[in-house]
Image (cartoon, rainbow, N blue to C red; front, side, top):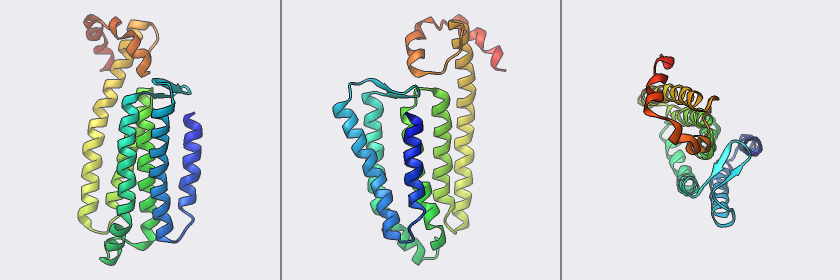
Length: 211
């Protein structure tokens, strides 16, 4: 399922690189937000939750409500972005040639955030959460001011440092599940089922293997 979603979003993003009109690029960004907003509403109203979409995606009320808020925020930001980018270009802070890159990063941020929210695998969640960092940094660094580039680098450094600790936590959790279940896993739903089998003693035994 995730492959089909990424394929559809890839086509959508590719179409966003074709138009030269700012109005059309902005309309596609708003349409992307509205599409995710509608899909979230349909899933909340029509799907039997919690449920799975393929092997990698898991939907429940919590992540759908978060996705609903995320899509609503992105839709509002897309409508605001037209006037915002126009003012930046008038002030010389945004090169008109970088407008497509701006909207590409903007749309990619929503796609990567959506996949991260619905990921049932912690490793997949980690990957797409890290990609949101890259997309967000692009939106800042694309501006001409030197301060924006510095801010983007600081943002990437701080968030990547946190993600490094999260990665170490994933290694620890995988080792812990391997000791308790005989086979390591990073699937949320599977870990939830077997969490009672993770004793404090086995947690301490797993620590040396992560060093």
